[in-house]
Amino acid sequence: MNMNARPNPFYDRRKRKLLRRLYALLHWGLIDLDFKTLLKRMAQLVATAFSGIILVSWVNEIYDLPYLLGLAEPTPANLYEASIETLWCLFVLFLVLISTRALLKQIRYLEGFLPVCSFCKKIRNDAGEWVELEEFMHQRTNVKMTHSLCPPCAKEHYGYEDEPA
Image (cartoon, rainbow, N blue to C red; front, side, top):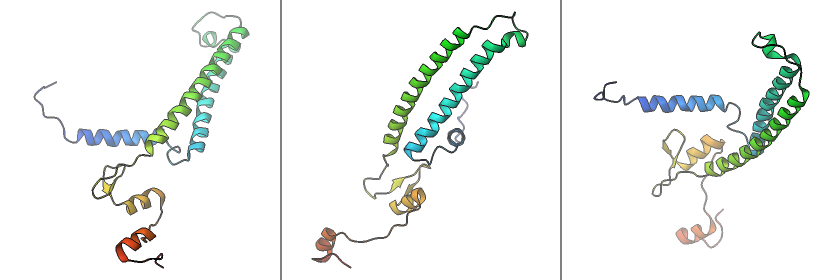
């Protein structure tokens, strides 16, 4: 590798774009869900994966998969061993579900922060662009915003005593 070679200025941009696509692919169908639905869907995915592991463990004990694949000599079924493996899998599943819930709560908390410019009050979106609050809210929630005056501002700036109509 040439140490004097100049780095490719597009590498970081391509890398970020690839990582965003990978993130979207891995989290397909999970991004725009409310917290309870997201937690439920993640628990279902994890439970399905552990069920598959438990199923393979039992099929291995009952049908002796290494023997069927020609990799080992036949061994008798040991249902006690399969039961212990199942209990360990269930214990690990419980730990994974608890830690997943805690991590998702932390992610939810951290995603609640919006980077806001301290001078112009524009908000930085996921693409790194600075947009007006109205545009940001419309992009994220499809909410249309309108302008109005609160009673203290109406009194301070326009001298209204009552709320403007």
